[in-house]
Length: 353
Ligand SMILES: [Mn+2]
Image (cartoon, rainbow, N blue to C red; front, side, top):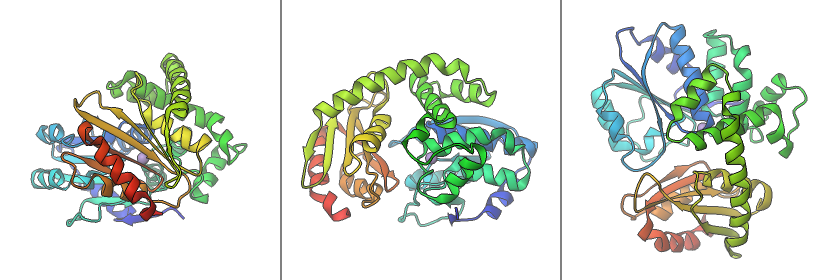
């Protein structure tokens, strides 16, 4: 059964019930499908309670990324699909300033001392799905009308094959759905890809996609979807040809700079379709942070904990940041530390198997 690893459903209901109409509410959510969808479900829950969201921020991970949010005015801050516990100092600052609730499914930061205000579901129970279930149980909105969107998030976040509950849910909405690669071409699979591609195309205007999905206008995303799909195909071929292979580590390692922010999608696709028994690590320059690179790591075998591995590999690198799930994780660090990082990765990866 899908469950909670920190806090509970009750903690969520209690927190929401404790908010007054005078409170200024801010929401921080992630820039992927689960981020958009969990933001929408949270908004609908709050609206049912007569509460209005003052601002919603769509944030990528990275050092210093919370600083701008902290400067804003708010009484209550929500995080959905966003592991703020990975930023202990910023979180303490927020704690001193306002009330907050982290509602997330990324593995909790073990080093965080004060865990109040943090609700964590299991890694395989994505935030959209968990909020959807909370909304269903609390009768906050007509969840039946939104099950297509919850399904799209479940497929996009790769939780459908990890826990039988999740596939059961998909099957209850789409009886003909099949538990294999064809799921990406199912109706909710396509919706998930379309939203994700549009997020990439219009980045950093994530608000635009959020508002379109909120009114169920997916047609307006068609053109962006098409452009990004083409670009992904081109770069999959390129990375396949150019990746370095380390046989002892069963590791594919590549660096490249596509025009759009498609590296994490490509890492997922390569690891899913071509290199299922390997670790795939792709690195590219950060557009919005000069002198920094970002990295996407994938390994579908379940034999390795990539979140922990990356944390170990960036240890000691200045202004670095790493985290994520066992099968999908990411990191950010200075470009000049690239060779040091690579050395750490090659030396450490086999200890994490
Ligand atoms: Mn997620």
